[in-house]
Amino acid sequence: MPGTPDYFSGKTIIITGAASGIGRATALIFAREGANVLCADTNEEGAVRTADEASEGGGRGVSVMTDVTSRASIEEMVKKAKEAFGRVDFLFNSAGAALRRSPFLEIDDDLWDRTFDLNVKGTCYAMQAVLPEMLAGGGGVIVNMASMSHRRGGPGTTVHYAAAKGAVVSMTLGVAREFADQGIRCLSISPGPIDTPFQNISSPELLQSFKEAIPMGRFGRPEEIGEMVLFMCSDACAFMTADTVYINGGGGFR
Ligand SMILES: NC(=O)c1ccc[n+]([C@@H]2O[C@H](COP(=O)([O-])OP(=O)(O)OC[C@H]3O[C@@H](n4cnc5c(N)ncnc54)[C@H](O)[C@@H]3O)[C@@H](O)[C@H]2O)c1
Image: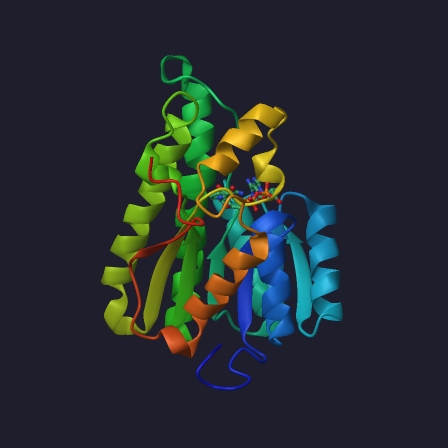
């Protein structure tokens, strides 16, 4: 997939939300390519598990307990990556969640603030902490996790989350353009429903209606996002920055 064989060998990626779902799958894909993977998550046990699997899977995995809503915790995360691997080449901000469903009129300050702290501030803090390292190292690639929901708006259930992911798309655009002439690329991915614990839908009817809205008739697999992160970080993708890429089985624009 990369233009150069062994392109990822010995390079370092920091992945937030690496204990589960898309972050975990992406960690294992980068390990397969021989990369160093710093696995960051509030779920320490899960991060350790992913790091161990990354080490068994061809790369070098190290874990760190990180809460992306805290600048201090993010700074520790970057320090740990540098201590373990010497440099940071890539950052994948996968940590994120809708936290809970709520009709728009019932979204209170607490839900609004926590959603933006996690999805928007968390992504911002990680970029601000990593960019100086990347600039000092001559460049790097940042991939942020947005969502199809920023196109749909989340009516009835998740306007708070859709708005936060819209902010991630805008922030990605701005950072990409601000640093485009300094060796930095910054992209986002906007998936439709992906089969991870995030989609913990208890009602079989709701689950079926979600699948019926997708022309391919199924949810995506976390690996199908991870492979896109790998492509985006590779030298096969050198002229691409700022945009979001939709991965959704053909659906989700309702
Ligand atoms: N699964 C989907 O259908 C889907 C669709 C579109 C976008 N997304 C986005 O993809 C990203 C990954 O989601 P997923 O499906 O892998 O979900 P997931 O629940 O499997 O994984 C999310 C991970 O983030 C971690 N996390 C939560 N809060 C954190 C914090 N404050 N600091 C550090 N880590 C924290 C969790 O512990 C968990 O390991 C999220 O940003 C989500 O919004 C998911």
